[in-house]
Image 1 (spheres, rainbow, N blue to C red):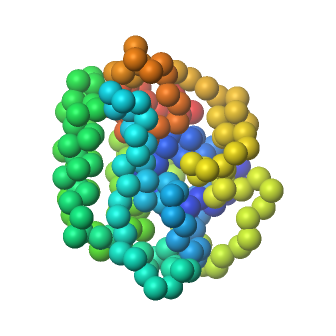
Image 2: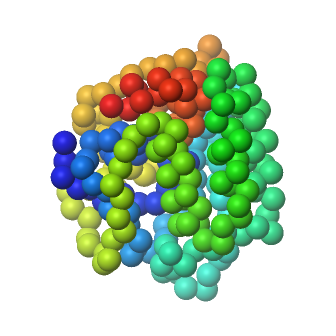
Length: 206
């Protein structure tokens, strides 16, 4: 088990994100970085009848190209909450444990947090409890450049190297509603695993 790892904030994080958390004694959330577009910071992937699709939280644009992640505001002029909830409902309403988790999940999203970082953190706390992973989480107090093997880089949609699953040789498949159409799709949002496996989700994380 690693002593400590540093992770970026993420919206409904992928399964590998929780594997990383479970592999360390403590987690440092990066709060001193600049916001990067097209990343897990405001994007999650779910399994729909059309395959993997992204749910993206719109953010208020800034004239400053380098915007601190803690200052990124969610744009509620766009009806993204309704769209995300409809997409999740359409994708998972026939999953075995969807009704068990959906109310608590949607309750956090509907609190309409001002800042992206705050929404992500509250969702993370909720999802960790749902999955059953205990984590000691603190916030970074300064930004440190990424190293050769850095979870902040590995756990991003655009990363081209070996995934965390490949690095730790831990690939486990589970039932997915639309797998008969598109096959098993790995490393989607952890809600894909939760809605399918419920309390047994932890066995696919550890």
